Image (cartoon, rainbow, N blue to C red; front, side, top):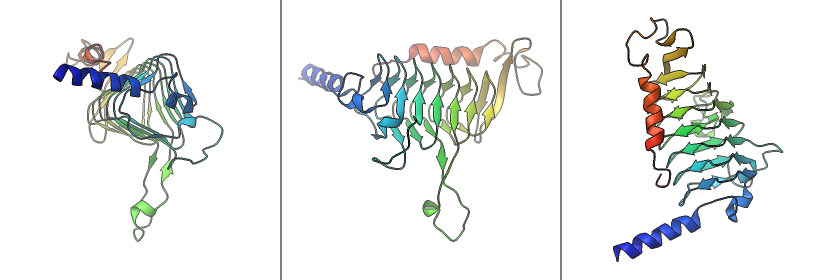
Length: 231
């Protein structure tokens, strides 16, 4: 009985996945070759403004949305762009209103939250949820890794090959090869071709760990160990 249930569930997951060939896939502005959005999905709407590059995998219960609600007209251009070769961990949310760009080969852990819109608190006498929110474009550079539970806030611009520690809350601009951590996130390590890994304002390789590539290699190990069919 257990084997039959497992087989049935596997068949349901395969049939329910969103791919370029599935009816649900046709609603997207673009789904590249080999794209798969795992079943069951999270909340997905505004597909006309979503582009996903070739061979990107989106995990179970991932929400992808453009605009405040389904049916809104958001103009002629795409708003949410996810590059090729990416892996979006299960339970993550990517909420776009103006512009979110995620480069090629970006990997995220589970339950990551990325948004280009936030509430404001301009008028202390008006409920916060009724004050008009503000948008600011988000860009995540190619080859970056976002740890489990990371939050990326409006206006964030991450360079190429950056690492965001699990649970970090990120806002601001960070150059290529940055390692950021904390709440709010701050730069804890960076890489220079001449200096190697070093802490901001510190001696290159002073602690040994990042100088030896431990943080970067750890991210790679996490990628290699990810079960791309079960997330």
